[in-house]
Image 1 (cartoon, rainbow, N blue to C red):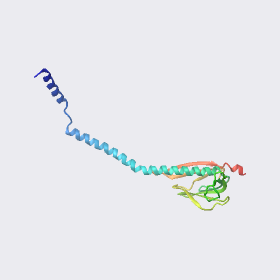
Image 2 (cartoon, helix red, strand yellow):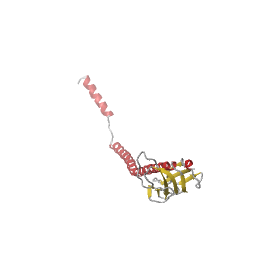
Image 3 (tube, rainbow, N blue to C red):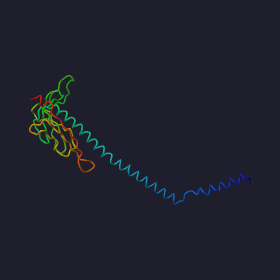
Image 4 (cartoon, rainbow, N blue to C red):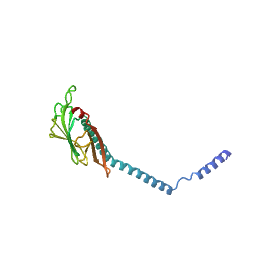
Length: 196
């Protein structure tokens, strides 16, 4: 046996003693810990998948409420005179882009907006819009938003008797439980001073 060969044998024996490996108990403990970690990850993924429809519905409700609010305030800014002012109903003369009041038919782009009576009315669950001839507050009601939880939507400044500012607040149930989701905006009737 050569020196080199003896040295290699000693080295292999030394390496074998250092490479004892893992015992069955260590393997079982590591496996159990892996199962616990994977169970926690799976639980989080399942919870996120279950919550996603509710989160999407909440986002859709808020987006729709913001769109409705923008439409209401745009029409209010073009308003001339408020005829009815209650917490659940507002009726005002404004300029709209239709061929005639209540038809919903868009005119040619060169045609001017016409004066109509627009009425917004909200119940405890929905808001609707009526468009009619100036001074007329009845007509075909079109639902524009549903999912609110109160009919107390409109407030007025300086007062409800002679309002020049209308605040609109849409409150929706919170899908997560307590409280409400609230979207609010307001507008001054810009054209009110022109009509006087």
